[in-house]
Length: 536
Image (cartoon, rainbow, N blue to C red):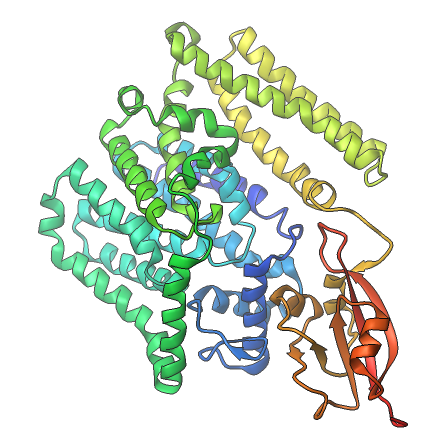
């Protein structure tokens, strides 16, 4: 490996660190993260890493590999509450994805510069950063399956069995992260695109090695369900049947649901859109065969995931991985061109991109002023720093275009803009723009760090799992009052008078604490300390 390439990898590592890690502490824990965190917490507390539970109930709906990683970090850092620490596994895996992208592109094109551009664009892609900050199940399986595909691709070129073994391990942990979904959403489209673009001869020669990869992957993935089947066979089968039904009956969306996904590429969306004009883009690609494979891979993936009835924006992960790689071919083309060489449509693309970057840069300081400074969340020094920095960016983008500076400068500044946005803006948007900052009451999420509980927490209904995470322990549902302890905590959104009517004369409310249930709305929830009425 040459010195220049080592520097490129070091730069990617640095960019990855400053885009993926600074905002890990910010985001509100949603339902999927809460499920993962609660299950990991109970793994650590119970010492049972095979029979997974959530709020004391069996949890077999999702394979456990992401939860195992989370639990390992809980053990290593000796914390079950620090959300920054608990999001480190997904950030580290996403950082690994950037290097996998680099090695796939370099292996396919023998072009380290294009590989570096592909890694940089992916590192600064909005949805990759966002999902790389959320320790749910969505990113893990596709990262590992992309690793599987990367090493199959390298193996098909080199015919070395070691790459197929590594690929099999990646497949195994991918299947242990979300079952067969990434096989359908990433691996199957890859093989079709590869066969069409590069021909079937390499696959035919290596079919035994590919089969070996599949055997390793399926064998590793089968260990956990096999262990569950030995002890909880009927329950496990019923859960699998329920999950299969969920994929066809819940969150059903139109077949056109993912048509706007290019927006989520973020600052590179103009190049992402342009890359879908295949013939035009292919002529400008440094490796039109590899670009053609990426185009087909992306297109087939788009069609396949659009056919699934159950859709969410975060389920578009393979598109957020593949499209930036396509866009990178065009970005590479523009980086190595002078203004005089550009034709009219190319000039239009750079102009549109520049206008978008200037607009973003100009809008950020007013947002900090109205949402931050006027509400006394930030001071004049921080506001001044933000204003100077982003106005400087807007000025540089304008000068870069009007004075015909190097196109390379404009495009690298785009990456740096996204990095600075992530460092200085993401936390602010999450804390003060997307949420309603209030100080009348504390948030319920503060309870888990306060050692509030001396007895069991109950609720009257099967509560949302976010609350189980926020209070830091299991929450039991009250079926009747016959076997209740003499003292317990009760979590409920109803006011004290209604709770007293429900408890009747059997119990007395000794204490009541009021919290905001969520960071992004005004919903109030109460935590009552209840004791048995001895006179009753």
